[in-house]
Length: 167
Image 1 (tube, rainbow, N blue to C red):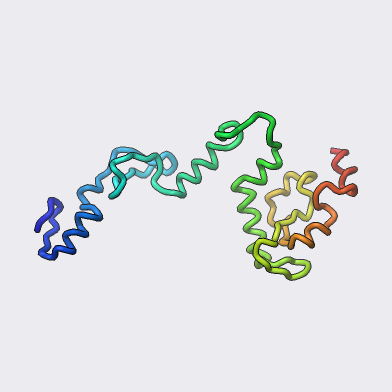
Image 2 (cartoon, rainbow, N blue to C red):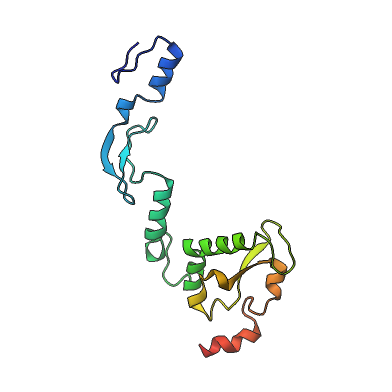
């Protein structure tokens, strides 16, 4: 048995796999390029010749994080969500949070708890008062939920109310 790409075999199983998983001649470029990295997209087996806009999940995620937030989000309702909540949902904030956890070895710095799902990234200097330090790794520490609630800058406490009103 011989294929148009030059593949020759007498083994039926090998031939069936060659046909099933696609001949390299079928994987020619589509003339369509990824919107993020510019790499030419190729036709893959089992795609029914449907062209996509991205070469993979990473490029798709990068595009979504840049183009589908704020007013461009599909469920956007004007004035429904404040800027701090949007910032906490951003990719940059999630990266900061993971960097703090890794630096502290996924362990609470006060009590030593390392239970998964119980840890939170705490801003040493208040999130609302020091916006320039929000993504500074040195301004973060890993705390468990109970230790985080005991800190002086957790939530909107009376001790911080005066400072916030001055801003």
